[in-house]
Length: 376
Ligand SMILES: Cc1cc2nc3c(=O)[nH]c(=O)nc-3n(C[C@H](O)[C@H](O)[C@H](O)COP(=O)(O)OP(=O)(O)OC[C@H]3O[C@@H](n4cnc5c(N)ncnc54)[C@H](O)[C@@H]3O)c2cc1C
Image (cartoon, rainbow, N blue to C red; front, side, top):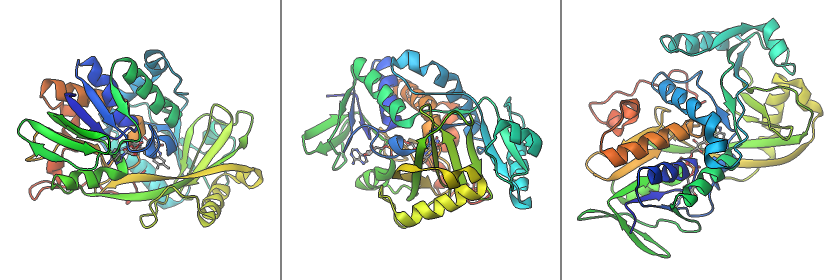
């Protein structure tokens, strides 16, 4: 039997397995479908420090220290590139929001600044007419989410972790020394269970009688034909609520920053493609002439204060959660997983994870992180 059962074979679950093996823990990951099948294989790959709520910044900075070394360490490509992040605004409202994001980074040693239109045009030749300024962090970047998840899974397996695909956890029961997890392939027991089930995390905690304040939301991503290199950064335009980046293969990914909390599945809808394309064209006119070759839906697990939920479940020792990443979980994953592995091995919660504990939702906790109603 393993020391630790991880429910969910997304980037967080696979990275945790990798780091837990370094701590000498026997670990089994249960994945109901395939590794990276959910958000971790469907996200846009942004790896950024800027624009985050203050408690996330130290974690994001820590993750940025790990990302450049992952290809070599995991012996597999992640397509990580560190060429900048741009958060663009044109209206008074969004320019004020950019100023606010800059102010909230004060005190951190973060290379993030506001660039005006002229510099923005040089950085991002595809920029459209409405953009006036952007928050720019040259040291942020992006990676291929599916390849990164598979890289962690492969390296975890080589270190001796067991990752069982096509194996859902179907329940969770407290036993004398830990937890019992039934699956269609048999029942497992371990002292520690980590719920990293993404959009399935609420169901997993419900089995233990614990309610996670998370909602699932859908975002659809479109992929264009490959083009010669046009720009380097991960880009969001806040007026038009759209995002884009160019992959290593030259394709442009784009999508709508407005989450759909009603239809939360992986389907592709024509109406969503039209709405997202209109927004993308308004922000970056080049999209009007590009061919879309592929699209996919993806589900974000969004917590009620739009910050990740990371911690040991109050009153249920040995049941850990890392979910509700609210659209931020891919970039943070290496740091979150490494810190959680250390926590599980040492029994000591690291300070950097303290703000993400579930006690913030209790009657005496404070929920004050929502500043502008967006999870991005
Ligand atoms: C369109 C989109 C764009 C995004 N863009 C970014 C971005 O640019 N940057 C960023 O940092 N983040 C981004 N995100 C968020 C990011 O994808 C997630 O935060 C991250 O992938 C979470 O990883 P995870 O391992 O926690 O969860 P997931 O990838 O959701 O993995 C959870 C896994 O658990 C499995 N599972 C569920 N229930 C069970 C069960 N009962 N038994 C066994 N397995 C189970 C699922 O099959 C799934 O594979 C985006 C998300 C989407 C959808």
